[in-house]
Length: 412
Image 1 (cartoon, one colour):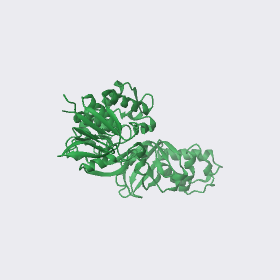
Image 2 (tube, helix red, strand yellow):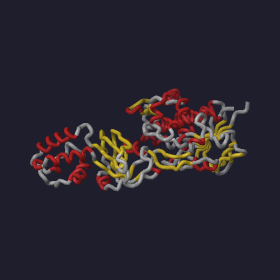
Image 3 (tube, helix red, strand yellow):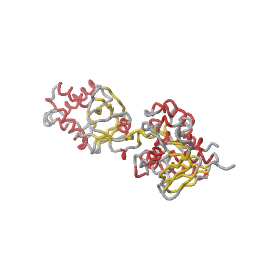
Image 4 (spheres, one colour):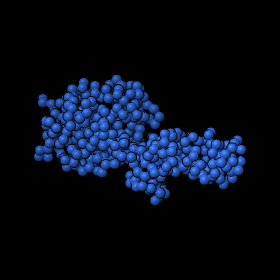
């Protein structure tokens, strides 16, 4: 029996999963990758550790995919986070589950994930070709191949797995969107997701490098006074605004950002009620009764945030602690429980962990990942208009959609 020919465009997470799956089913698979080595973006995920997936059930997983999560029901049920862990373990990569059910390789090295996947596709018989796809070749409504810079590759099925537009140095330069559009697909507007936030507040620059841990964060819409996101954890001040785990997650909830519409509200002391915090302040002021207030916060706050807090408080820096009034204490409590930073916008898409937007999901069969417009054309991974929160959920999209596309693209 003549084996089916499958071309996978893109050697990232989704592409490697799709290619290996198709090859294991007997297909003759060619991976077209423009980088010298596959898995470039995987190398930088999870700060170089690679957060492979999130060890949760399917329902919890879907709840963590705010953009078109329901589209993934078939894919995620077919290849669950549990299946992902077993997949890597069976290939010899030991994993561990950390806080928030985040799954990492035991070695804490993303390169081990890449090497495991490369071994997977190589052992399955895939051919890896260093080239750049420029067009999908379509004849009578069916895909017949991929045109590259210096040659055309012919195939029975083509899987587009080119990633998004974030981190372009890894090869994610939006090629998949161009190929999909050329094939007649609608591309939902692209925007950054899981990305730092910019602010024109000068306090951010003065606090550059300050990492806050165990604080609470709310993102509020100032037009409606509604909270669009709340979390507890870590964040970081930068020269342009804010970053860190909570801020990246918050960016996924901000869909219509405009300068000044949203404000970040940070509770610097979430473990204390206002009443408890006021008592703590009274104790600290009593302990430093003859000192200037500016010298009384060393035990309460990180050094870099003391001046911004004092400026907002409006009390003279050299006012003695023993002369602070009850109203002044209460005003300080409100600042510490609600330190605000106006949000200007997102950082550029090139700095985002993932791209929101992409190939319109209603034009893809969710049970197979095949195009509804062009027979034999499949999509997997970030090129599709699906994105999730941090914690391994986005890589699981790649594994699940790649598995499904690889399986059905190789069906005879």
